[in-house]
Image (tube, rainbow over all chains, first blue to last red; front, side, top):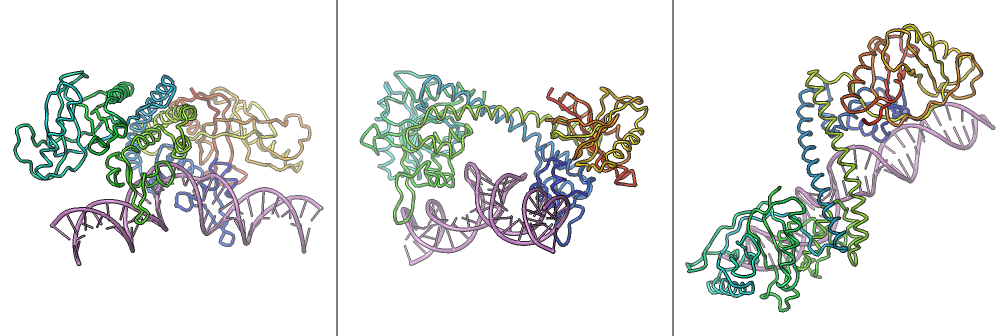
Length: 271
Length: 271
DNA sequence: CTTGACTCTCCCCTCGGGGGAGACTCCATC
DNA sequence: GATGGAGTCTCCCCCGAGGGGAGAGTCAAG
């Protein structure tokens, strides 16, 4: 019979852990002195402790181990649980690799820029939206403002309320200086009266969007787009839909273009 | 200005997290109503939140991020921290792969045996020991008992106390049925008088031993050895020293051989 | 005025123990 | 027999990044 310290040294399991296993009923000492409370362990409890340590190391929680080792060790249960953990660990390993890749990409960016990246990129999702849509091909980017006025004017005149910030979708697959195919869109509540150019439409949910945020006048937006696309490429994603621009703070809310805030999103998928 | 819920939806960061970041000083709302305590966030706080989320995702803790983002973002600090995290993550990834390998080996064992493995194996270390050593080549395994008597008898007659269980080292590289080269060893306290066959010796510390525990008579020990060597091979270790047997409960402590407890150890290194 | 959706603070919970306080207990020595 | 040091006991708080929920206050629409 060993006292807890000696048993702890023998098995290389800390005293704290042994007391916890006792408390959880995982490994109850052969004998506990009624008077002093001192625990005594027998050498033949070592295999059980060994098994606990091994299963814990394989990724099972103490609760799971306790449930599996109450009476006879439950072979089928352990099998099932280990397969499950195997799947989880495979996933975690893939996540870990992806994260390591992101760290490397970030470090490479720091190295190249010599400064913090101007645009941080995250992956988000977007819910489906019921929107009023106005699509047109405009000669130049600033013409968007005219479209915007048209759309908001119409909805405002019909007393429809916006349920979120307006956004634009760029349907051109590539960047172009002129004749830009733009869909301007705003989520709203109510019923849309008929209109020649403005239609109701359901914007589908997007499960995976690479997003970044641009502050300042719209002339700087293309830098943000460049940074976003660079990130997408550097992190092994593939673009799978039209770019979005979300006008969180625009001319209607801020006088000063330096205060504009625009979120850029591009739908992506893995690989 | 957005209230916390809207800001939370916009950034896809939970309200709980936003409140935590406020508390940590990571992201303090632009305005807090003195009366109601309601938080108001400005759209131009989104980039900072974005950066927090990105750095967190790269594996930095909130404390680290807070330290790095108080004033100017500290490029050098982030660089150093990320390199450090990169090293850690590389290690964790390797650990994860090794663990996945162990899970697979365990599952394969379950599959083959159709039952729990008879011997669980863990990796331990052993401290350096000052021991009395008696080495000899004996015709058969049971002759060890005679050696054991010789060693213990000598130490006992000199009133030397054992400071741990006795152990045997098997110096034959391979298993053999007869003429076994055995070193019997026992840690003790005191000064060893001279003896023709028994010498003091320092058993060096072993950083990495594969260990398992055998219960029952010594005739079953070779099965345990077989299981241990199988595990070593299946888990990609290489044997790098003589086997050890530690007699935790032997004939001197238990009448019944079924109650014997013996630990088997073999020094290993990676690959 | 009421109702339902938001928001606030505060407290407890996670998981596997680590660290430490204060009180006993054991063993060996003086 | 006293004492000192090492070992052990229970109990409580701590970790990280929030999640869950209670109880109370707030806001906007009908």
